[in-house]
Image (cartoon, rainbow, N blue to C red; front, side, top):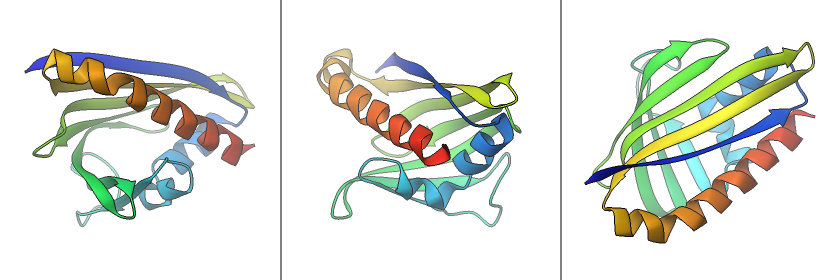
Length: 141
């Protein structure tokens, strides 16, 4: 296994607190995350130790991604550890207030996978995340 990095950034025309509140409303991510259903599996809904599951695919058939929040610094930083059988690694989103009405959203993942498999999957992953983040930005306008 090798660590593989993928990242992207975008500017969202919304205050940083609004962006944060929408991002960490885990179960509402279905509104903007492409072909993905997300739900909280722990008693706590937010903060370090929150456990989240997501299935990405068509008609609830797809890849299960289980995560646990490892860093929680509202409204600026959230990091997760991917704990599933298939998806392993870390994820991070960081928000930076540009001004009172705009936020920079930096998203990144370190995915543990054999390099040839990652190279094969990366274009689809990148496109799916780009579409999802675009939908997210439009939702907040």
